[in-house]
Image (cartoon, rainbow, N blue to C red; front, side, top):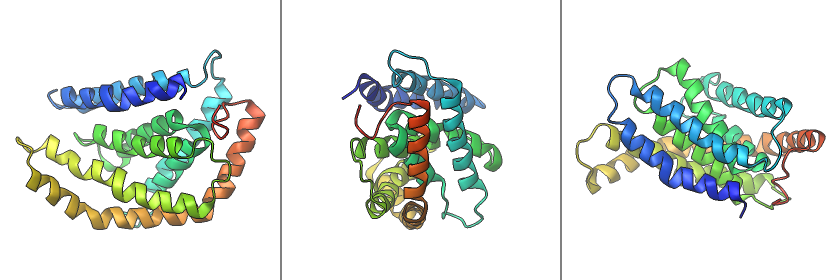
Length: 233
């Protein structure tokens, strides 16, 4: 496992949870500070991904385009809980690695909430969206085939079992003074239909757009000499 992968796991398992815990204690609009801190923390493993060289501006532009597409995939589609956002974030992770997938997911949540309204839940959304991109990056390391039906199944399960539960349980930590098993189960149960709907949307997007988009991203990586995540190097 690369050093950047290890750093990504440390940030996800330790630094971000600590930031969320401390951020909940900030008064007023402290969630903006929490969100910015999360982006800064994610920048460390992201830039480590490039190892001994600095990323070029054109490489960062590619990821900026993926963020813009993901924001559009959340904001522009009018059907509730049936968005393209997670498919785009996951495809970023598959193409460029878990570090890129996480930072694109986190910034997407931060940026798209300017259309929906920011709140104390925003840092948790950044964590959940980013976690989807990170998981996709880790699962598909070294997988050169990346068949659409495999990515579709992964996208569905990742929404139902990974991203959704993180989003569903966030309000327990934000609102409730005491965490208990009953509230946790009730939260998961109430969010399950939403997660299934979003999982179906993600699966459809993976089936239709997954292969052609990854082929284009692979050509961009080859042209600009970006890190070859697909080979595991």
